[in-house]
Image 1 (cartoon, each protein chain N blue to C red):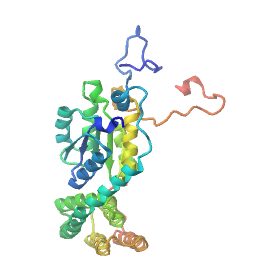
Image 2: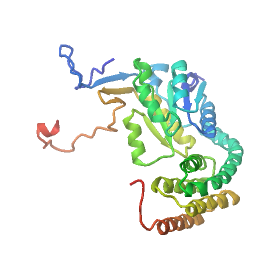
Image 3: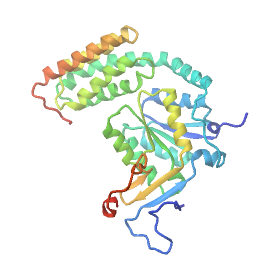
Image 4: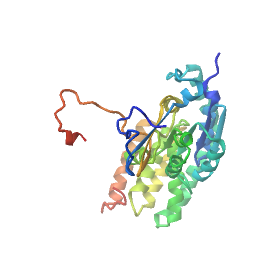
Length: 177
Length: 165
């Protein structure tokens, strides 16, 4: 179905060129399901929101076990990744990436920030240093032991990690950016 | 009480993290979504998409072997209009502009940064459900209009016709 209101659609008697854009306009999913006047309420019912938050809390216990195991596993890749082992680097990155995506949702935002910093470090440098990675993981481990960590302390730790990265990579060679 | 739209929805959730798949699926169930299909990468998602014809796709970006960007491109290239116009919400821990731009350029409808929250997930869903499904098809792009809004000049038009084009 062509969008009749679009000024860029060729008139019916004009041949469309190969490079012409075609505009497709279909009704919204809400309209298709419940009729032309229906829109989904923008405001989320607070009772449903409570239930959703409770769902996250219910899943948190299971996630906490996984997080603990993941942080522990991260240590095992550090030495090899630091020596240039591509597989270890890739596994370490994948695990840290998962932590950065999930930890915040399940109530561990500080661990998510450390994981984010670790991912950025791995993304940013061709040659990565084992000690920088280890300090990141230790920071996650400490935060986990403290039940999530302290925001102020996390700020200071992240600033220290940045300084450590700068000192370790004095040549400034980056793989990205 | 009338039937909620969520009870009429089939949503495909694609993520290589079991925890994230489970989380999004449960949150959708709380909203009342009748059918949640899950897949752990773009390849599995493609097969399940063709089989279940979901109303919305929520996909992670980075997955192996087939990531969310490739999945989005494949979905936008389907021959059937109604399937090709499916709203795609990309969920990613990559919040940098380059990731969002890349998602937009493969035809993703909306982008949600991890960590996700129930409220943000709901907002993205509502946006995807309420917006007309408008696609632009050109030789090098198939997807929603990449311009987020059209801003008309404030004041008299001073550009020449050539510049305006």
